[in-house]
Amino acid sequence: MHVLHVVGARPNFMKAAPVLRALRGVAAKQTLVHTGQHYDHNMSDVFFSQLEIPAPDVNLEVGSGSHARQTADIMTRFEPVVLERQPDVVLVYGDVNSTVAAALVCAKLGIRTVHVEAGLRSFDWTMPEEINRVVTDRLAEMLFTPSEDADLNLKREGVPEDKIHRVGNVMIDSLVRLLPAAEGMPKNGFPDRYALVTLHRPSNVDDNESLGSILESLQEVSRELKVVFPVHPRTRQRIGEFGYSAETLHFLDPLPYVEFLALENRAAVVITDSGGIQEETTYLGVPCLTLRSNTERPITVEMGTNVIVGQDREKLRAELRKIVEGKAKTGAIPPLWDGRTGERIARVLQSLY
Ligand code: UD1
Image (tube, protein in one colour):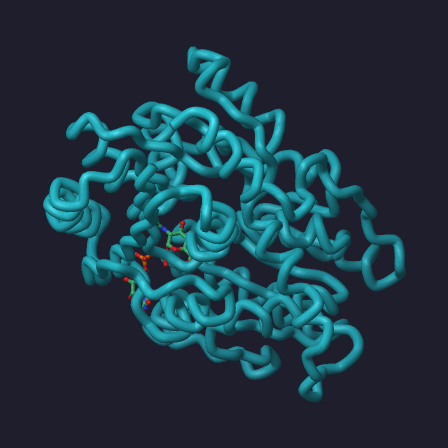
């Protein structure tokens, strides 16, 4: 079995690493294609080294652009690679533009496509990732899901049951593997209690008013807790364009995986609009306040430590108060979020192809 993996953006790397590892010795051949959607050293290369991902066999170097342009560039550059390499199966991960672009190319060429992290739905069609999820799931021949809600979403959409394999959360495999390294990281002068913030959703950062309101809220938070904020390049650009100054916030560059995990694990609270971080905090038992009005990962709310706050500043204040007073929401780790998802994926692939 020749397996070709496609990755492109930061969250893909944490998901592909465990599968690449588990397929070593199982697949006759593995090929890794990086689309180049993310290209800065600290958005890409540093994850390859910390997660011990082999260097990509091919880098399509598409870079940034509008959705149409980026998706089209990936498709045009990926097609000849697939035709030349002739894989038996192509694995795509998550919900970024690289995921849907690669799935579309493979579907048109009649090449088996497998979607890892299938079935998640926010039911919010204004999110680019929701479009990517729905289209990729429709195109893929095999769907690996992280939780029961994902299975139910797919069944509701008419996906035959034999295409769905609930294997658990593959990103948690990377977390489990590198948590000891994160626990061993020095504290680097950070206080014992702080709020860790990440922000990059277009709906939060591309709109002047939303971004301004969030930054004001964070300044309020900083009266209770130090705010540590590794800034995504997209957010950095917007903050620069809009000319905000927020002196009480401690801005950092995007962090490598282990350094970020160390900060996350020790945080009093994480305030975020990321999907993956809602899951990581649930695993770590760290309170998470999500600055979105919905989530495609409802299990983090039902079972985990996640609370959906949206843009409701009053709710953010109230939830933060609970956390500061030691009354934070507690949670449990969902089934199959155990660090062995990559192995389960490898077993299913081995039995079928
Ligand atoms: C993408 C994903 C999003 C994911 C996020 C994680 C899509 C539609 N979105 O969003 O789901 O949560 O990655 O980070 O695929 N930039 C750099 N350096 C880089 C990469 C990007 O400076 O290495 C800047 C560019 O100005 C670019 C902007 O960030 O225009 C946005 O990058 P892009 O990949 O288009 O989307 P993200 O916001 O990163």
